[in-house]
Image 1 (cartoon, helix red, strand yellow):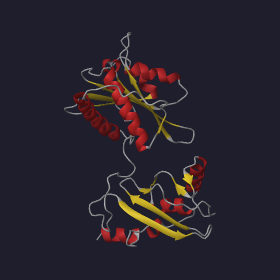
Image 2 (spheres, one colour; image 1 turned 180 degrees about the vertical axis):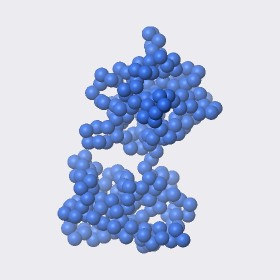
Image 3 (cartoon, one colour; image 1 turned 60 degrees about the vertical axis):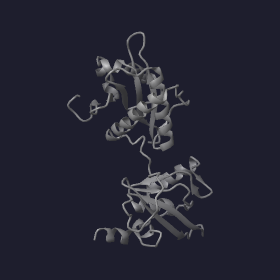
Image 4 (cartoon, helix red, strand yellow; image 1 turned 135 degrees about the vertical axis):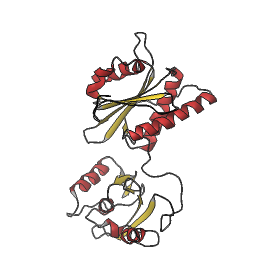
Length: 288
């Protein structure tokens, strides 16, 4: 909208009544004359906390007596303690959202974001889902699917699970499965424990899976960022009895192995398939 990729972006799709605006915080004032942002809608406020974690606030806005709608509600958040850097606002081309529709959407989007657990969701209360008919629910679910697509294209993986939740059998050659299950098992010289962990290779990187064991004692030979992450996990009680309580995504197999073992490690050697084939050998075979 402003002739630059860091400015405002308006998104529509063929055969979809929705409109999505991505607006950086300093550009909100420039949107005040847009009539479709004076309608009812749902909005997402994106920012980071002091620890650098991604955060989001999800809200709804109806049309007010003064003729203002979703943009006006977003602007009210400028006074709040939570500092958001970007706002994403969802509305419709035909102004078809009433109080029931926006309540349903706010509830669904909030609970989906909490379930995926990529962002810290700042909403204090569980939004009221409203009382919609079966026909309206089907229509709104379609709207949600398109909204997820647009948010993903805009760079927000708010509703994209870190690992595929569809149960699949593991295989040596991946058998068309984009997520390969890998294992690590090594006796720790620091704690004398057998450390066993599971990891999935995904299209985003390597995910150490919830329930995996990790060495709780750090070696002197450990990447600084991994050391800080492990310390943060302990402070947040995300390591319980030597096991992690959530999934962790890493850009490389070596960082995933270092997180598990508490020391520098060659992830291509440490991570192996169920049949004991190392990731290094597996990838070499895949390239043939």
